[in-house]
Image (cartoon, rainbow over all chains, first blue to last red; front, side, top):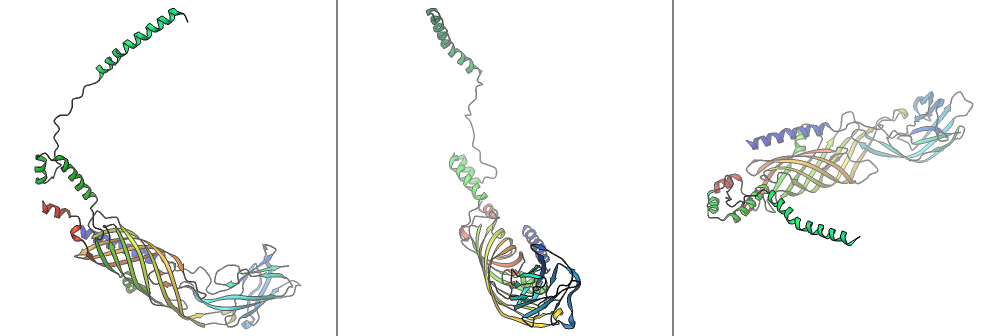
Length: 158
Length: 288
């Protein structure tokens, strides 16, 4: 009789634990679904918002813009996955300042992030160039671009 | 001080010295006399068998008392031999969960040496495999059949009970070396119009070293057979890093990011040094 009670308790607790452990699995992706750089604008050490900004990639289909005539302090700059160079135009609408261009040269790295986030491309930025109409400098502290939702490109304005 | 005063002081001291024994006698008179125990009979405890009672009657009480203390300690701390028994077990929890849709599984065989019915060194060897194409995701993950090993020990809290009942806590050190493929990966890049770019990551290899803390329960079900479960909390110590990502499944550990695992095992018990096991209560009664 005592043995039966032990076995019953064992099965009940075991089932409870198994159910709990299976239910506890985390199934949320905390980052983006692909590696993508996030550029932020600064004046000195302070983040700034540009009042009317248009950003588009040179060669993007249908001349589509990433943002158009919008105020922005940050902007995602999606990279091409069939080429290793991307060129972007920053148009400061409503000002007399000429457009700036930012060029990124990079390597493409196929990457498996996790079951929740999936397979994606990461990028290693090899070099970058820019014009200096409104831009003072560009810094990329960590050249590995992943799906993490963090600022990876710092654009310092004049 | 005058001579007269010195005489008076000397007389007073002499009187005080002479009166001190009288005071002590007054105190002795106040002590309550105690009747010494001269007729104490040493009686055996209830339930003592007849042979022991006979020995009591012969007056051999000192050695009997010593024997009783020894027996009493043996009941409280039953002394099992260093090699009490060995269990051979198979963990089939993942096999069971796979039937209910789990996409990975680790199967292992383990050998446990039950020492003094308390300390239990454990050796585990197993194989793990995984295959998953998650809904609404962009890849297929194939974890190839790969080995893993674990070393560790349990401490049995029910060491006073018969070995067929075990409630234990334990630690394990696990190691696995494995291979995996990512196939059918599709990446969409709508801004640049580069939808459905495919890639594969084949022949990835990895290794991992991890630790586990666990609690478990084992119950004899019939003859030498037993069932048991284990709830494990685990964490990674060291892992091979890759430029192309981290494995989702690690054989023997489970899925990345999971902190808990569950084991369900069937055991076959091989008793050892059976003649040196403490007698069960029923056996003792029969002997009497």
